[in-house]
Length: 99
Ligand SMILES: [Zn+2]
Image: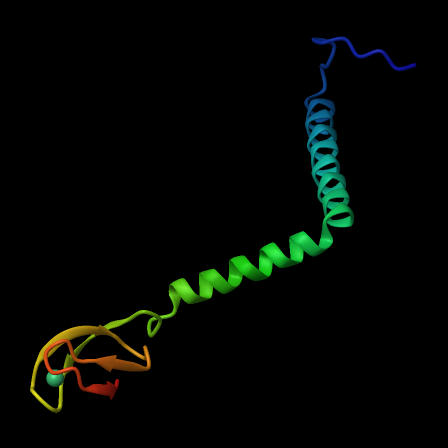
């Protein structure tokens, strides 16, 4: 058995090694925990990641829910509409037009 007593370290290199070993143990615990999580809930992880990336892509996508100015070609009513929404029914004359 190796007995470690605080204050016995005279060599700075040994202290560095202990810090390094602690860091390695911490990294190993994180890796093992991550591996266990992956093995236990792989579908949820993949789904969550894919869903998160999809939402992130939508959020960062400029055309998504971009508001644009719209002028009704029939009555000239101007309004603000969501771009690429598909069709818009004019609130003034009721004429439906594609945006
Ligand atoms: Zn109109």
